[in-house]
Amino acid sequence: MGTSRCFRLAFLLGSVLMVLLIILYWDDVGALNLYPHDPHDLYPHDPHPTSPSSSTPTKPPPRDTEEQATHKPPTTTEPDRPGEGRRATPKPPGEEHPLPQVTDSSELEERWRGEEGKREEERVRQAEEKREEEGRRQEERRRRISDMCSGNGTLEFPGKFRTFDQIPNRELNHLIVDDRHEIIYCYVPKVACTNWKRVMVVLSEGLLAPDGQPYRDPQALPPDLIHNSSLHLTFSKFWRRYGRLSRHLMRVKLQSYTKFLFVRDPFVRLISAFRNKFQQPNEDFYRQFGSVMLRRYGNGTSRVPESAAEAFKAGIQPSFSEFVRYLLDPQTEQEQPFNEHWRQVYRLCHPCQIHYDFIGTLENLEDDSDQLLRNLGLEDQIKFPPSNRNRTAASWERDWFAEVPAELRRKLYSLYEPDFELFGYPKPESLLHH
Image (cartoon, rainbow, N blue to C red; front, side, top):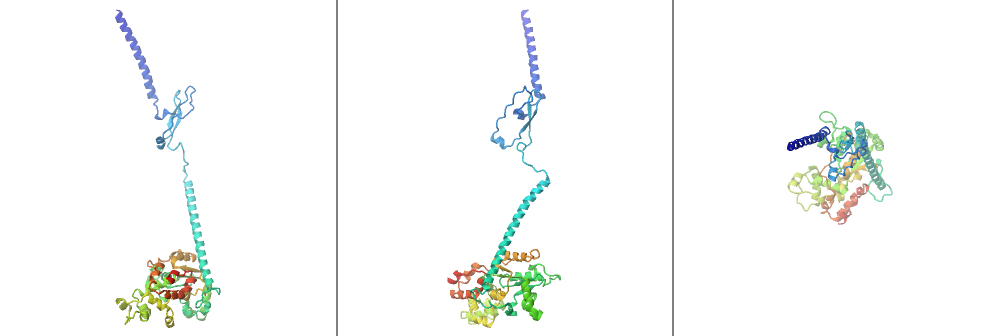
């Protein structure tokens, strides 16, 4: 009897304990289900809980370097249920250290215009500095010529002190006139004159294309017509056109038109002329000059070929040394004046009588040509044609003059010294003394 009572009492106590356990378990499970924890709630950011009874939240431990590098979004806090303090919610990426953002397209455009404006100002500044440097360079070239042509100049050369009216008409045939643009160009053979003649023909509209319209592109001009004298109006033609008024008209145009020429190192120009006229078959130059050089200075050649084709076939050509001897021989100019390809520039363009506004150089051809076209206001109307890639280089001088005796080199320099001095080319000391 006692045993059965004990058993019932133990069962009752066990049941009560089981119910209590179930109630406690249900409380915990219910709380978890009703209020799930956010993984970011472990370290709430708000240091001031809303409930007085809640304890102060613990400050989160510092993140390590790797965590900072991943840029995990920071969190903000919001109120939890009563008694639970504040709950943390994630911030959008980048909100912890917000960067200034431009959302207005007009502000973006304004910033772009500001940067573009700075770049444009820099371009304008550089262009202005370049123009100033170009202006100074031209002023120095003009001043040098003026000093050389003045009575104070120590170098004497033929025609230095004569007046413009004393220059014969036949010596004015290198001054090409373009009345449409008020330009006068003195062309110097072997100094880019072919391309500048192309430009002058296009500017003057002196030649019609097959479609009946004037040529607009200098490079489109037929090569065999470029040097046709009938295409160019030169001062030497003024007498036939204007008669006794010709000299007066020349002076008027010289005073008001823009006058320019291009020059080159005198010795390099001679090498270029020799290469072009005597190192390839050229019947006219061979008959008129090459055969004369061979007869006068050849190495005992029994018979000089009559034609360039025959001479080249036989391997008989004048040498550069013979060419130099021909230039220095007084008999040469007694027979006829120098050909334009090796005549001195001061004899072709008369810089002591004509005050040129622009003096360009072949050594700086592209830049000087662009500058001149800008000065004339023609940079948008015409482009200077590309230069010849097979141009004779100044570095070739030593090789070409190697066979010329030093005494002849010095005499040749004296013959062309006015061009060296007038246009600022240095005296080739090493070439003259070695």
